[in-house]
Length: 261
Image (cartoon, rainbow, N blue to C red; front, side):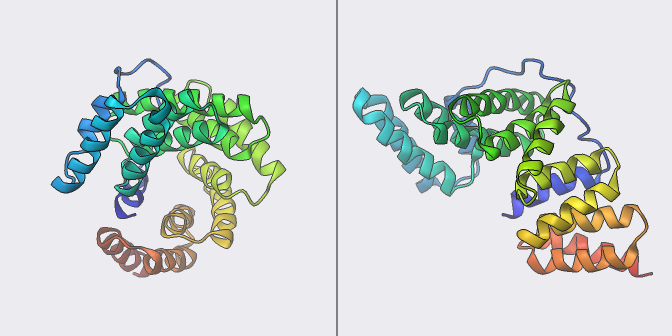
């Protein structure tokens, strides 16, 4: 939780370095094998062995057994919070068993992976994989608000046509005003364009439905940027109460001290 939370917050704390992606130019060619090797870095040796054993089993598996082994591999990558290989595993599952749910999970995993990535070339490549997976999901269930939300967010983050993504997200909240992820994405994009009033409205909706440290942090930052110090302090305090990351807690304490002067 701490790692996933700290990364997007860090991007906003450092103003707009992340900015809008430069476009959907082709990034480096990446595969399940390459991201697996990278994702294993920092893991416990016993966990690495468990994952490697499943990967070896996958290489030996008959076609009729591959879906079951891939599901085991997906569970392992999900358990250790490594979304990049998880996305590839779900895409492989989707190719074997062409289900909407597999494509949606692949898109969600790819999106989580590029959101938390400092390597911009790799992030751009994963964004492309996410767009493809969400488009495949929508081909199988055109009414899915979750797939539309993922695709809209991916368009805004990594293409030269962000308004297409915004339109998709607005379509989602028109159909379901309480859709948490769509409101959160619109709130983040409002912050990036410095439309903090709109961001506040979005994040107030999010925290009323599904309060979490990240959303309260963004709400507090939006309040701070329009000079509403008391509201910002209150939202920062809520974020601190929900945060499981000591580094984030320390940062929030410093922000509250600054705003209290």
